[in-house]
Image 1: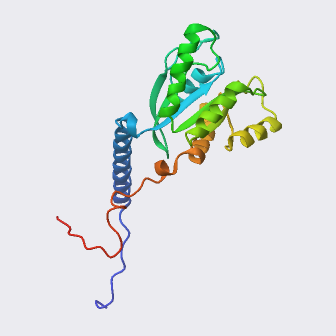
Image 2: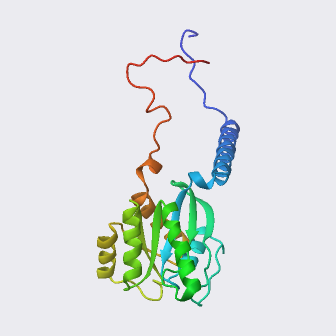
Image 3: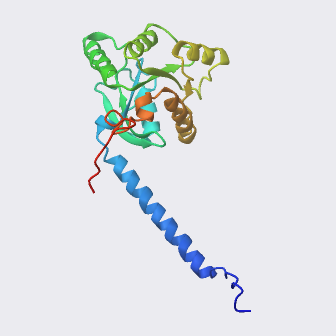
Length: 231
């Protein structure tokens, strides 16, 4: 009976394979373009994450591990980091970040005082602070970092370095969370684990306007307004 509708035949296998390859290629191109756009993002629009702590607290090692490359010089000699070291990178779903490694805040001597003054100026650039600590340690330096962050209404995330050598106790982790109001991060030697923990902490601590940027016209157009659209 010609009046009956013909049953729709499935597409040939080669056609479906072609579509799948085409869609995958298109997705990869869009993803690559998206990553390139983030790499070109100016520092002014990046989430600024500044690393503070005592000398030899593992700040430079932490920056290198997060970035996946040796951007900062590391050494067992205290005071190796003199000037701030910056590294731009991307961390999804946060997007473009700017990491800043600073000099230790307990650096003795005249040069140390100048380095510490330069490091403290970074507070005003930071959106989030990473406070590096050794397991079980806490003192004036750490209190200073928390106070500086509080004055600027930003979060300070405790990051426990050298945890593979001295694992933190549950009581110490609870102490850090109570002091900072943020879940502390254990700096695992495994970069993937470190990035996973850091990503969660940054999402918890990031400013609201960074995670949910205001709409472009949110303060210009209101319900009931008449607008003219030019196309």
